[in-house]
Image 1 (cartoon, each protein chain N blue to C red):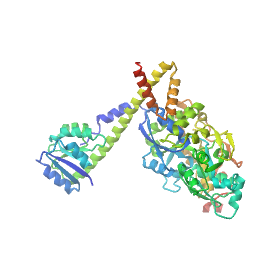
Image 2: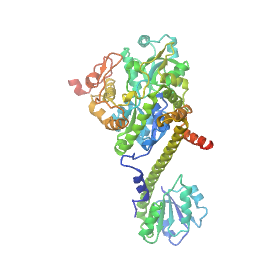
Image 3: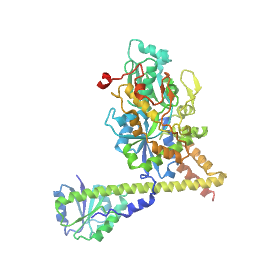
Length: 192
Length: 404
């Protein structure tokens, strides 16, 4: 069963939404009047989905939640009482997974939340791939830098510099990037 | 209500060139074995980054566990036993899942080892073992590493060549390679066939001796391969090619000089990889054998990773040989379409394009010719006939074959 953290600091319409969610079979953890404690509550409740009002002052806090829970992020779903495509578009681009318009029928909640979860997962996978790619590009640049420094220091060619670095790494049971960092650090210390 | 055209997917499209890998971070499964060296070197020594890949090494504790994680997608690619790939592909002992071989990882370097008690009883030669087996009394228990794997096939082949029926005259059991020495010490097994360093470690610890090397059975035999699912190849063709190139370059690097081989042995002995003493890994890695009976020699066909690509070419005849042995030992009830299965599994196009991009010669022929220790010649040309050519076998022909 999906556990939903309902951020309830604009009570005007949450009453109906909450009962609709409970009716649809979700476990709803209702939080009202909090702002400052939000990151801790997200950590404690570990919801599958965070549901929050577009008008909620807690939205600023959600920005913080997104940062705090970077390692274990949660999909965030917004609800609103008006259908404004522009607002939705912006919210989705900033990382919100789906949108619920107030007054929606109970039976439509499940598919929307399913889509939110699926979308969130694919976003996360994409993000992880991008991060891996960034890390790998960064690693490659550091290795290139160290290789260049070594070529100057030892007056050797590229091939020889790589071989020297690899032999050093293997004899210490290290990765090439670790030896590259050591070479760069040593070079910095000796004043380039 | 959902906008699929997010800035993130645009950014990804921008980073990726036309033949850039579709998936850049790969989980790579390996076992604690000397012959996983090329994967360890590829992942840690900067061979993958230039192709836009980062390889996360994931050590596995058993071949069955490795297979399960590859099939579930937890692993993207893995070191696999040649015969294991075929066994999974055909669904021998489990549901069939189509697999693919990207390249060969190594040749040679496995060994059949017997226990210290057998040595003390004078069972130190093939003839003495055959005589011991023919005596009345408890059957010997010999371990291999996976039912359809290479070690099962080397053990069966070698025993049969000595006149010992592997499925009738001895008990065979499956034990993960890194646990062989402990099982030998506990006298739960009388011998085992596995990859390094476990034979050398048995010798070093005084728990056993090496009776035969796998290269005695077949000089330059196929052994481990780089395996992925067929689905992986179809979804991520550029990734498969990039991975093949990274591992090919690492293989070339290891075999380039003795110094590189020594360094590689040092690297892989680490707790994170093979986790065994360097003294058990390095000598055989350099071809220096001691059998534990006082014989030492420089082997003419030691473990090798490259040999100008001869090791890495996924020869169709190498794969088909395992099918002939499955047939010989009754794992296949009928003759399969040997060539079609091998053609489906071996990704020759990906291998060719990866090797040629690195200036590694790719032979036109897809079969090679070898002579095994019993004098049988294998060239891939008549698999059904070859499978029927052995006096010792456990073939159970289907009804159609009987009617012939």
